[in-house]
Amino acid sequence: MQQEIAREEYKVAWQTETAFPDLAAAWHAPNRAHGLRTYFTEEGIRVVPRGDDVPSWEWGLAWVGYGRGGMSWPIPAASLDPSGARIDYRRGALAEWYENSPRGLKQGFVLDAPPEQRGRTAEGRRNG
Image (cartoon, rainbow, N blue to C red; front, side):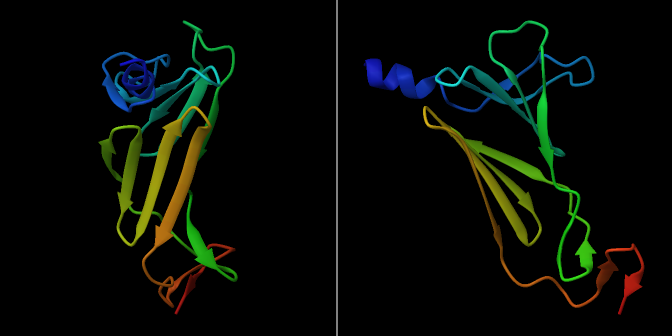
């Protein structure tokens, strides 16, 4: 029973109120072992101290593009799919995931195929 309770503490759940005035509701996952709370939004993640009513700091991570060489492509809008202590971001050919556990928050991503030949150069010009 205690193991099940401990696993429940790391699950991703919908929260109707967040620590941010600009974010009314979001998926979130507390991490008791590391004293963190992660909010998952379509744009990316936002991490704050778990026990603070008003966060004393914030750390975030969001994709701005992906590519190869001097070319980059925009990231498609994400659809979020939580399951247990994991949440998957589906972004077209790019799949991203986060898994919350006592070891921390683990991130992974999979690109189904190499980026297309046409894209934007690092300077923002169209290529191809």
